[in-house]
Structures are given as structure tokens and as C-alpha cells.
Image 1 (cartoon, rainbow, N blue to C red):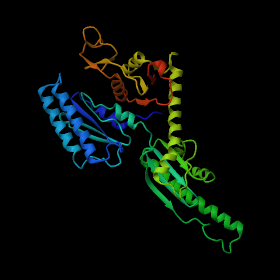
Image 2: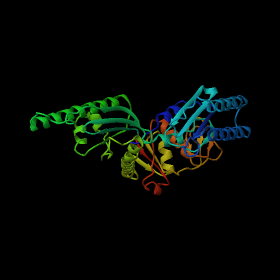
Image 3: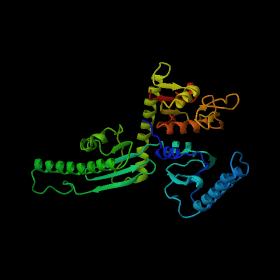
Image 4: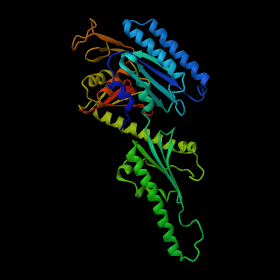
Length: 381
């Protein structure tokens, strides 16, 4: 299953056709860790947007005034103490005073700094950054347990189980058999408490996958206490870390290989579904023309894109029809409405997919979309 970014879908559903400024601020720790470097980037982006407004065509006087006010608001906000810079790889800020829109979205991964002025929010970087799955991680030993969650590069602890388990001290006068049974009962009680913490967190918050880590003889015992819904999301394999000494960074590195394998498998399954449907009258289409046709018919369940795919095209401003070429006369062939020239069909295809409730998957690990010119879609019908 691919991951559609809920914030991006919400922004697209909010679309009214009024101008909106979409600003992405790169917070890469190696380049923009300090206030002066962030301020320089903010200044550059605001100046770029101001120059675009000076040269803009097709905007009314009221729209220009509104956008200049929006730029001032963005400038003041980003240079204040309000933005959630801490722990973020990037920020996406979307502003339209005419539309009463001001939304700030924190991204865990860096994205290039960019500002876009258009009739709808620019969400492609948002979708790409938020495609990463959210993981729930449970690490156990006989005596301890930790439950963490979030994106793989920004895990945070939800629960810590550091408790007495019989067996840490000498057995005294106990018989060996009774002593061993007591140890195992204490261990099972401990693992049951950790599992209850995992089950509760999974119910309370959305996670896409669950990973377990610990000694090879202990992890299956923990798994036995997990709920059916948690088991259904378990990633294959096991995280190998020493719970007594591993920090969050080490845990993240250990989880990274499981995440990579899971991404590859997720893409493989989607590409296999696409291949099974393309050219057989099934639920799959490939190539720009066929994919746009499916988008126009609102049949797309999952849009598949290569990272570098893009094309020019046009879109009807009244019915939203997407076309690779502009028809003669510059009018929509469906309803005769005016056409909007598109420099980036990639963004328009993503918008259309989200608007019809579909998901977006950027395929990074397999070359299958190459023969399809970088784009395809799994269909609902």
C-alpha cells in the first residue's frame, strides 16, 4: 500500500482557485543549522517571490495586493520564534490571506528551499517527503523494553519498561525447576506488559509498519502477545541492537535496513500489480497519455512516478481536464473552457490523484517505469 500524504490531500481539497504562496524552507542540519543561515535562505526566497510578483501576468490588482501582504506575513513569521524549526528537516508553509489559509507543516527530511505562487498549493515536495512510512518499534530483553514511534529518522519514545524480573538475583532455597518456572513467568508478564503498550499505542496513533527487536529467543514470545491488527503490520526480520546500551541514533540506523527492504517490497508489489493490469484490459495503465486519461476519468487508485518524471501540458480552468498538448484555439475540447499552461505536469498529476482520493508512490528502487516514460497508475475500475 502506498502512502498518500494527508496534509497534501487536505491542502488540495481546500483549493479555491485564489492565489496561494507555497514556501519550502530547507533545514538541513549541515547547511542551515544556525539562525543566520536560515535567515539568509528566508531572505532569498522572499526576494525571489517578490520579483515574481513584479513580473506577474494574469493577476488582478486585489490579488497582487493580497499576495504582497502574504509575503510580509511569511517574512515576519519565519523570522520570529514561532516556526517549529527544532527537529525538522524542512518546513512547508502555505499562505493565502484571500483564502484565509495559513498552514505550517513540519517535514522530517530536508527538501530544497523553494517558493511557488499559483492557483493551488504546491504539494509535490510535501508528498515526496511524507511518503515515508511511520513506524512503531518495540525493543525488548528479558528485563527491559522500549516502545518508539514516528518516521525512521525522527523516532521518539512512547514508553519505557525497566522492571524487576525474577532471576536477577540468586535463587536461594528455591528448587531448580521451580526457580526456572518463576523466571519464565516473570519474563512472560514483562513481555505481556510491553505488548499491551504496543497495542495501545497502535490503536491511538496511525502507524504503517511495526518492527520488533531483541534476542532471537525473546522476540517471538513478545509477538505472541500482540494484537491481530499489530501482527498484520509486522515487518519481516528483526532489529539487532543491545537494548542496554543502544541510543536513539543507533536504533534508527539498525531500523534503516528494515525500512529499505520494506520500501523495496512495497514498490515491487505495486509495480507487479501495474504490470498485471497494463495492456490486458485490467486495472493498470502506463505512459503519460493513458495515465492522464485515467486521471481525467477519476479512475486512479495509486499513481506511480519515477523521481525525475515531468512533462509540459495544459489544464482546463473550468473542468480540470489535463492534456499533454494544448488544443488548437486554446480552448478545452470537453467544455470549451479556457486553458492554463502547465510547466510541470508532475505536480498537476499528483494534485488530480489526491483530489480523487488516490495515493501517490514515488518509485525509487526499481527501473520498471522506464519503458512507460516514468509514469503509470493502478486503477479502481
